[in-house]
Image (tube, rainbow, N blue to C red; front, top):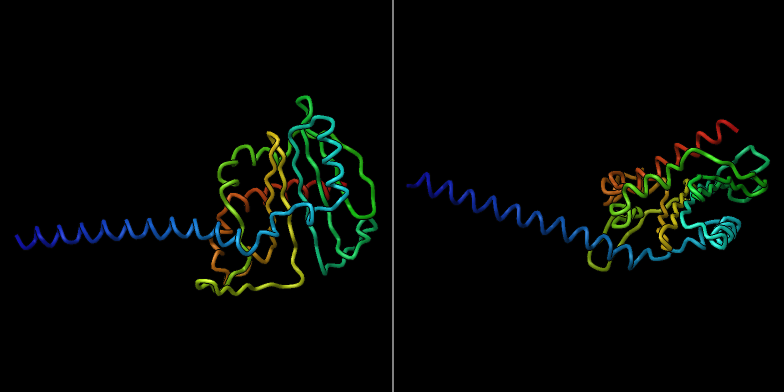
Length: 218
């Protein structure tokens, strides 16, 4: 009998442990979204972070009734880039991908050069979003929060780090994600593991892969 009672007690304790663990994980996910919306809502505004030339081109595509558009922009504040197309205080490179009449196109944007439209096989940015839409839409990449207790929050920032914008327009809706390398690299970030395991980070990596391939072949 004592052994049976001990086993039952252990089972109850284990059940309680998993219930508490589930509640902690679930509340953490909810708090993550609330925290982002409360303190970092400015990161949701793509008009202030994506170059105006790209925003203008998006408008032109929508006028032409293009309903699937993807944008990837990489900004490098504090970096010195030996490229005549990068004559800017902050060097940046942007790409627009869109689908029209079953064909996929891309156009590169830089501060000082005009680039032609190209037809390509597919866009990693658009393809991956369609596959992982639910996961991407439900998540955010958190800045470097190194301490958070009630309403007290400490955020770590640096001046020079690569900044990325990922934007998709599909089914007449926008999804925008902004993140910096520092968000993913600083291990003191309370959300370091969450950020690096996010579908948004995978979305970024696929987009970087295609943009880097384009740059190497130009």
